[in-house]
Length: 364
Picture 1 (cartoon, helix red, strand yellow):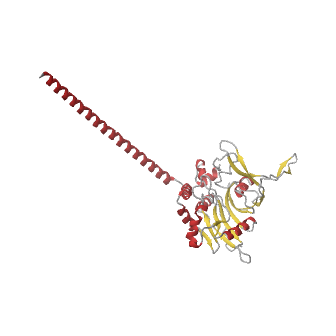
Picture 2: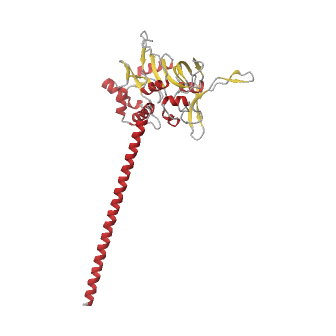
Picture 3: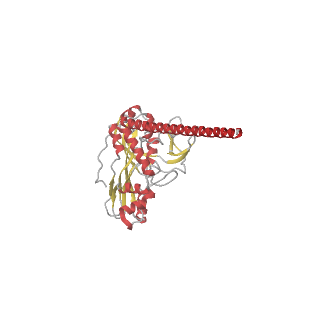
């Protein structure tokens, strides 16, 4: 009897212990759920606060900052979107089209050719553009010349290889009249002239090794008399000739008309920065020789643009291919192609109080 009573008491104690352990476990689960719910609510509140701060910052942004932000977002979107989306954007930007060529207004920030780090380029989507514009009869379009990723404006595409080769020949033999508009930091002196300085590519050593195009002049100033001394020509240098003319200037900025006689990589940017000492507004690569630091702008220019120096890195390159005169066939008039300025360029001109003349649509 005593043994039976002891067994019952032990069984009851074990049962009570199990109930206590189960109760503690359920309480722990409830505490963990409560903590998880609290953490999730805290995360949601922090995300909402960030969104609210972002909206407040956008509301307080100056018009120029808003345009810069939108341009950066637009160029990033164009590089990351599905190729069909970029193709449709190009098809909507047609400046001219006939049976053999198409001219599009190239958007800012989109590379013409693929390469390291490039997700989508114009050359990648040309078959889709051809299908949209020309139907099944044209398999693809052919690039006739290149524009820098940061340059906007007129770009010629051919509908067949033979015409592409012909137009490429016209560019190589300098039969195509090319006109660019650019905003410079600094006012060139003299206000009009020619730059005939060869250009070559060099590797820049330092914390961020990179390559840049630079000048390789045939003359330098030397001797006590400060006379021009002819130097040995660099075999890797390319002949580069640019005609420039200041159209308007206010304070520390100017707007120029540029005619590249030759077609060397980054020719206009290099001649402006290193030849005239007046880099193009937003050209961070060629505003500093030894580094890739953002362009340093005068305080007066920052004030007019409504920017802080810390935000200057977001300024786009203000270089636009505004006009092409193309002698396609002998005995016919030149095809004169005009491209209006992008919105960010117009906004900067307005802020800097710079004015441009009207393009002559009849000029051949």
